[in-house]
Length: 79
Image 1 (cartoon, helix red, strand yellow):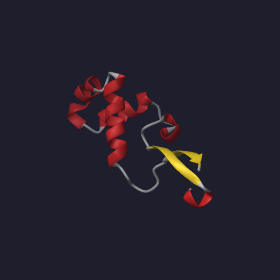
Image 2 (cartoon, one colour; image 1 turned 60 degrees about the vertical axis):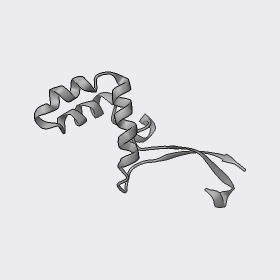
Image 3 (cartoon, helix red, strand yellow; image 1 turned 90 degrees about the vertical axis):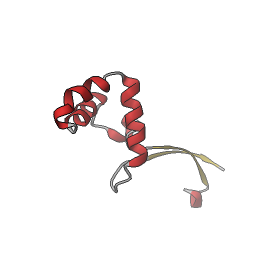
């Protein structure tokens, strides 16, 4: 980006926006996260029911999960 004369103004992580996690939805991600809690899946679903909780979990996960292949978007401006 810098070689093209661009400045990165914002980085949008893998789970920060539907742009990067499509074709999944908040509902399908909520279901998958709850499923991974195994026997506590029901408790996890209830805990993540409010969008603000789910969005917080997704933001934290987006910062931690840096496996290759994750989509990241950038908002850039010209210098």
